[in-house]
Length: 346
Ligand SMILES: [Zn+2]
Ligand SMILES: [Zn+2]
Ligand SMILES: [Zn+2]
Image (cartoon, rainbow, N blue to C red; front, side):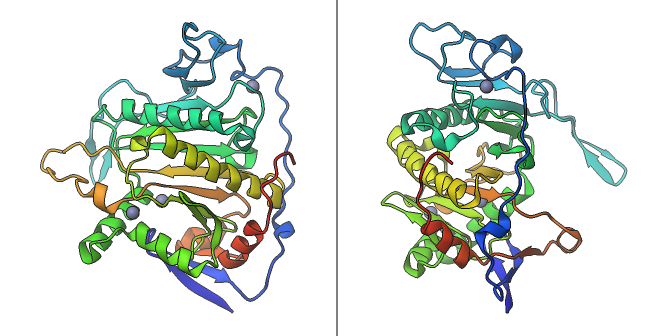
């Protein structure tokens, strides 16, 4: 039988098809090949990108020269522009504001290859250090209410450049998906005086059916009400609301868990396209008339990474109803992933 499952973090319902077990190979998709003559993210072609806003380089290495390890540049074709004012206004019943924001690309390695999971752990830590530095820098700009770091892997997940990179978009609103989570966590804390995600971690560890990976620092699960096949969440066991407060040791623990998870995914589903999204606390600048704006976050929010393989398409019922249909029960997805060796090199 199918069941309706509710996710307390997202306030969404998913219809999970439990009645027929599907094999992971039913989710394999043919990958399109991209051919590029020159890659703008490779070392030596730095003039093809806008000047860098951050880089990890050896001491003495000149800015915008080729000798970098991780490089962050503004997107050459930004979705949003950093200059200007929000200019909030109404048009009759409607509201609008200018497309102000920041859009940056984090080039994760000088090597021209598509896989974050192939980086050695020290290099993955450098990538996360770049995330941390950009979050700390951009949150000083009070126009931005949220800083979204995400990765698109594969053409079907929105990435036309086969050189491993992630992106950061700063926006002047709190995105609805985040707002739902933040409100769910705050309301749970107000009722229970406990963090919703800490409680979720404890329940998932006790239950065990949806555990993909666990060590003494991280837990990776397929969410109870996963809205798509092989969806995963990576949680640090130590309660912390803010990724930007993680020290280098904590970033190294995250690298171990993420690498293992990405390798399992790549091996089980033949390098599927995926997105990952870092969910961390928004900048909590007090707002006019809102002196307590997100002031409870340190207690009630818990940063995490959401990882979504792009294996199925949204169809009419999902689009029109907001109800998701998941043909792969998360317990079965977790079992397959748990039993997959994280072996590099597909
Ligand atoms: Zn390249
Ligand atoms: Zn927590
Ligand atoms: Zn989340």
